[in-house]
Length: 523
Image 1 (cartoon, rainbow, N blue to C red):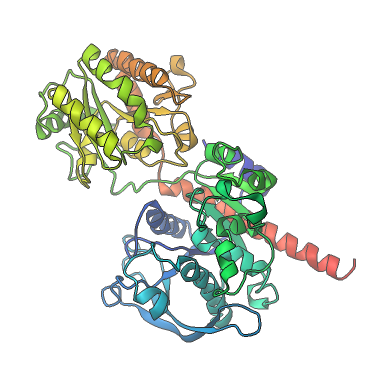
Image 2: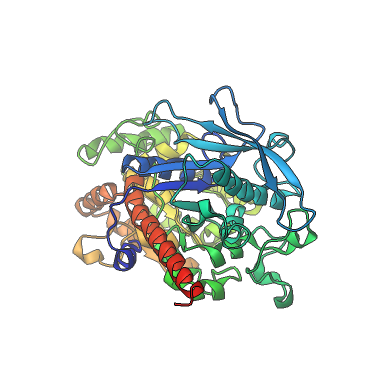
């Protein structure tokens, strides 16, 4: 399912306890825009349960409630240089610290880089003209803080996406002679390869204008910073690169998925790994979930059927437990593959008498299609075209299948959450979907979903038809659902794999340091 065999082959099984710092632009509950904030909250907590000492550093944005989280100062008047050339400015920052009081519920120890101009006066995480300066400052500020305050030095710094892609570069150049930082390894974690911190994607940039990814960074206020590609820099300089599924790690070395960085990623293949994200098993627990009509588990599965009737009733559909119900919980976008439904969904619904429930928001053309189909088939189609935090839980608990026809899906959380509630996925074989759904041995009683390979409406229709045919064989379908619910998508599983990866990064870094010292001494 993941690159664990590759990781173990290279690094062995490592038991050492590590000090790990996650440098990120987001961390729930302080600042969360998307999935990155959830990862930065959940993965460190899981690592802590394994005995490691993980911590996080993010900017102190203006909307973070300092009193609520009881932030204390650990470093005042930190002079962060804008560069290391003559005339560089000193940017005055502070560092504050959050300490958890309820370790099983709270985030891990978190540092906040405080600067009034770039963080405190900004209520949003992203979207400013000087975002490059803001996040390059985060990387420089992090290293200056670790160099000045030596009470805790990480073994490894995990940098997430372009926003912290500057740091591995800085460690190899401007900060290479800082002894306090010399033993720190770096892992660059790719969550969104398309966003590279540049004005336009690498693949649309002329070869002569592309950042080569090497050399020292310009001063923060140098116009050359506009030409820097921090995603490329992170990939080029990190000790280890990882992304959020083993299939996606392979896909991004191709022109179709590589966003103009595929050649570099192929060069770095020996350092490139994929580990699936996890899901929060406490929030996503059908046995205790307050948003479902009837709680259930894999050991008490019969209670699940009450949720189908409750879902149908809530959305004004005929209440009939013998109807095949399909669900979609997603951003409504072309990237999510929903254009494939436009030519086949109505035919499928009419032919099978099935029902379709979709919740989400996104592109107008697609939302209009689903709303128009709801008018045509009001007893079979329900389109909720707005954000709803609670409804997805009931959809996962009440639907027979969940549809995920994504064009690309680095990891994917929807299929994991749906499977946790016993909904069988029908999905395209890509990225994390391919790594979490088994459709290779359907005749052996091991499959956990239905996959199709190409962005082709007919292939998607065939996958839906296979699911419908399997659903009609009730004993077989019940067995599949129980297999689906027993899959382990917990953050604890992810953390065990990351533990090995991080220790491998530390070992690689120290070996490289030793080799450089040997060459320097002329041995």
